Image (cartoon, helix red, strand yellow):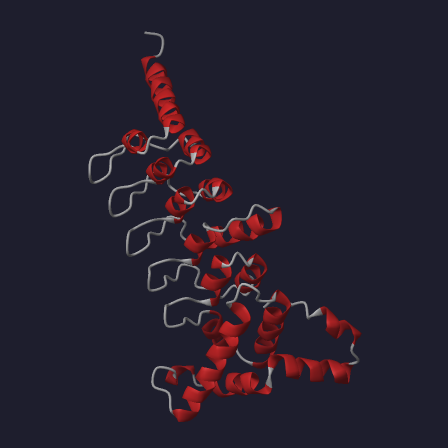
Length: 276
């Protein structure tokens, strides 16, 4: 368990005041719930009234501090540190991977809000079930792929996340991958990162679409270039309706992309022909 940085205000407290501030910031009710539950995890599926109340307190506080767009990493770090010191690794794993009624964990929420400081704190526990899918079938990697961020720090955390999980996992409802989602939404930096982390550009969703088709449909020419530059990308794949990436781009009247695809096809034909 790594050491976490306490909120900066605590640096100016004496030890007695320090402990008092910690208790107030984390909350006695939260820690009481942790102490009650840490040795009773086997009973979580059939809790008694006392456990139900403790679980309710735990869920409410954990998602309150981790799952909003404005969630503060210092506060999350403080709670992780207090739990790490007062409970067990199994209990901390249980809390870090708590899922709400929609199947979303703190990692899902922090990734979807592009709160990469919190994402890093969660990943650094080494306890996250990174490939956990919510009820819509999305993983944290899929949600992070939609983030509109290009800062070096955030992209570094996104890389850490993608290296921990299965980048080609497919959402259960439509079968889309993180690469398809990023390509559809014009997240060029994320497409580049996913490819660099080993994403397969030729995976097809339930309708047969690829990431290239998604980029063609939505007119993201920079992403089309990125994908075509990948040595494994196959622009000749067709979907369930027999449409290729070129067909999709033509139907959508994205003429620049049509030119890119045709030029790529001509270059491929020339290379195949060699010196004949």
